[in-house]
Image (cartoon, one colour):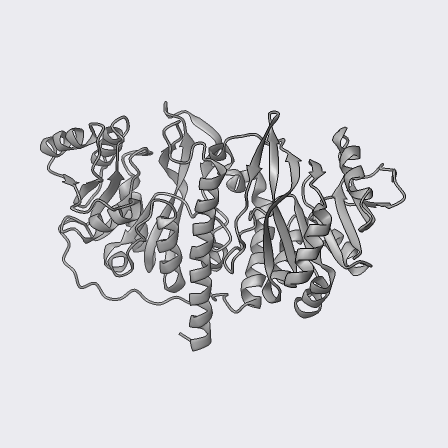
Length: 489
């Protein structure tokens, strides 16, 4: 079994230790050290290759065209790597047995001197997001690479999306296999909390990267028959008489510190139509219920609903609001942690529905701390969304923005899954499959980040569950879109 390794160079001391880990293996025939110039090969197995980025399409093409090996081990980060016992043998043996086009394995993390397990998710049909976590070692079958390139073409001239392009093409016709064994150890350098990493992909500095990723993802959807051209269904005629034009929907459980701010933010809205505030109190136990009861007594626009069911997640609470007799023609999101940017947010959202044939309108928000001071990366506007390609690109990214607003009649037909993570993403994907989505790119919403947020600092197991669920939503949606395309609907 012959193995070629792609290893990014680093000036740090650990590089030579990592290099020795791979050069000492009899399986490794060649190590391609990718660098930005000035690196002199320090081992007979090494070959220096200069490139502007590890993931550049030109580099991927250069490497794959001249491969003389059975497998290509791509190390996708400059990190210190320590291989486990017979790790490379295990990698290649499982890849050979399964016929995998790509194999990856669980690993150990060393953070701040402590070693912990880092399990990964299984790859599935819908795992097309560009930030899917393969760990640091990605083992490609050279045969699978050649088959994919022959069928789908070489990597485009991209700077950042070349590796993404390669793994998507390989994944179409070959399995991507997750080895649930801890085969190596990575010394972690990014030790931020999960909540701090959450918005990396929408950092304005990454917009060039995002457009490249969108280009590659869109081509992948075309390759698998799931791409949707910018043709949309007209909205069905309205048949329901609603009590008000709009309802602000606030699902809540145990947010006594923040929910009053949210409710008051909604009540202060100035609009040329009638609206109310529907708060679905999911059996709070911290004083939230009494607080909401008082607010409802003070202002009849506040509709305080306590569900009969005790098995509801956030999505289920949303459904309670949507199906209630209080709900208006438009249902507009406000989380119990957050507030609207000013008194015209609701007006702007409802007015945007009149601008086009929209089933849903999504705004933009500003990240702030509990004292409403802006925190990095600031405004999250999802400008990667375009009317022509937004619903395709939505399958690549992890969220679409806030606040989210729905035509209640359509939302009642679809409803949200009864979960507390990804419920908004699910209904947005579903509606965008058929209808247009409107966007507001100015920040109209303040998203407060504080230690009480549900995603402030999640353990790896819960992060994996969240990612796995959204990948499952993508799988469902891709299959539905493939079927829609096949049937010409």
